[in-house]
Length: 178
Length: 452
Image 1 (cartoon, chains in turn purple, yellow):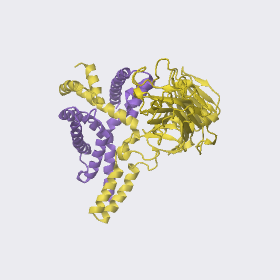
Image 2 (tube, helix red, strand yellow):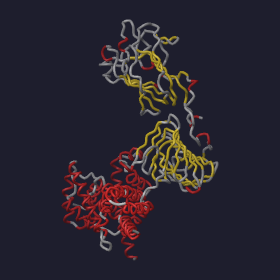
Image 3 (cartoon, chains in turn yellow, cyan):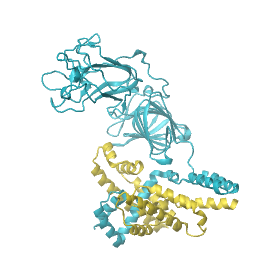
Image 4 (cartoon, rainbow over the protein chains, first blue to last red):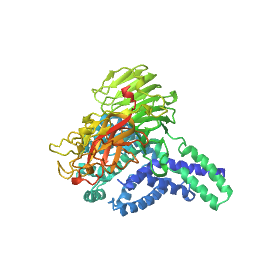
């Protein structure tokens, strides 16, 4: 029994370690769709229930991504029934595979993002925090900040483009150091 | 597709707002252009990172391992032997350290009697907090009354409504509006409050903070120290010590202001306002707004509803001119099929009685123009928000020259500054006219910290 518990705890550790990567993978598979957290949650449940089938020493990430892919398919079917227009499924899978990164690389991305956000002007930082923390609409922020929604949309576009560029620069600098 | 178009389409795609026509051309680009594919991956990672950065440790809460374990335990009980259950119970204990959210809510609320509030949560479904508790992302609106905040970290606060606040995480509160006092134990030093005008970081202290829509935000430090930063203009920072109070000036500088402990409550008021001294609330005529008034020389403006015109010793005359209000009805100054009257009491009162003298024009007897079905709405802000239950009709006036009117006092006293009569019908009168003669509210002023 001790060995079982140890193995199960190790399995839990694997799920934990790959949460960020799994989440990124799911976002890639279903861009712009609501329900990323739900799909991740379902993926975790299935991973746990199928843990007996996982062979220690094999590629956990590949196995978890395969399950996530299946859960996204289920979610896509629901969205299609609701009449949503979605990115082509094969293309999304191809892009998600292309963007797959290790948990370590994703941690590096988070650190780079932190640096890059700190370089933003206060107004930009507040807009990003509003958009991603509260998940409230731009209209709400526009009312609060006294700016038009369209100008905020343009501002958000520029900020995200700048953050993407800044993160890639940071990652490039890190890779030359290592 | 040029680079800019590509980036716009990708961002719109991840925002869920890409038009189907643009989606087709973006797909084409993504199939053929490796640079576009890389940009797609970058934006996917950016979205993930931005969401994770703000959700932080909440990431663990989306992993419902506690529920998984429970489900497994139930199955084990159904299909397996006791040994298997024991193994899972042990595992459950292991997982508890890793996954399961602390049973203690991040923030618990206690309210004073008569407080009206609403809570909305970011977490939904089974993850949604229950009862008077807040978790990161939860938003609290206090329409009126007072609420005590008890943080799991040990921070204690008293917030007076009207107030709006959002719990961003255990150590960060966004106070959009309200008057709040906080006591922060040393173990929770670093507790932060953001208002529209300022950011405050506690350095182990007791402080008050006021944020009101039409005034600049204020900080009052009663003990210890706080660090404050103006969010606009020059964005000046300052460290304030016990006995100091500052206003976040419009240019981003700090202005001195007298320390006012009396602006803040440090414990919940235990009782409702004492209504034994309830009295007539004088409402200036300019504080009455009617949806319409009949035009011409009839002199039936809404001013007459509160100016005591035609009222003598609690009895109202039946002489209409200069003494009553009448809506414009079908077309006597525009169509008004949804007549209403709003009374602004000028301050928040606890109201335990009101008296209505209905439309009393006679002769000719036109009392059937008086209000019949009505909905009485109230609130401490112009948005109202509450409806007085149990009052649905005003009786038709007698048409006599000494109309006693109708008194309403069989309701639970309510707090309001704004009261609206939403008029649904008259008593069968002509031209959809609706009228009233006089309205009086009785109550006591609810002490507001700002007015002490």
